[in-house]
Amino acid sequence: MIVRNLREAEQTGRRIVTSGWESTRLLLKNDNAGFSFHITTIYRGAELPMHYQHHIESVYCISGHGQVETVADGKVYRVVPGTLYVLDRHDAHVLRAETEMVMACVFNPPLHGTEVHDAEGVYPLEAEPVSG
Image 1: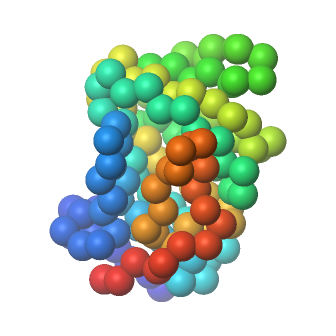
Image 2 (image 1 turned 90 degrees about the vertical axis):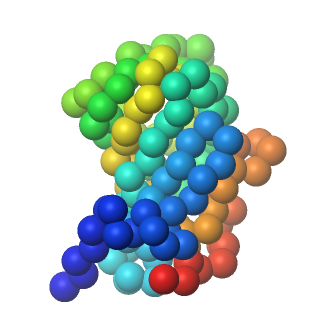
């Protein structure tokens, strides 16, 4: 059994902080669960273009509000507590946070833990594992 505490994990290399967001990766590839699980905070006012070409991501909004736009068709979806969106077609998208947003995120294949978005908003398929 794997048991982790969010507040404790935030004090380790599992917490990644970048411009616009921070993410604590509670479950990673080296845990051998077949997916990774993260609690991610999107900072108020952030506008984040992303395109997960190598991963399927499921996102559940715990708190805050904003919107997600699919680039291909320009559709805009409201994101509020209780909203789930799944990027099941490797959808290029833009996430906009009107307030600070706390999200629970699941990735398949699982992340190693050190990933950040490249210039195109993509996570690499392989990255260095997190220590700690």
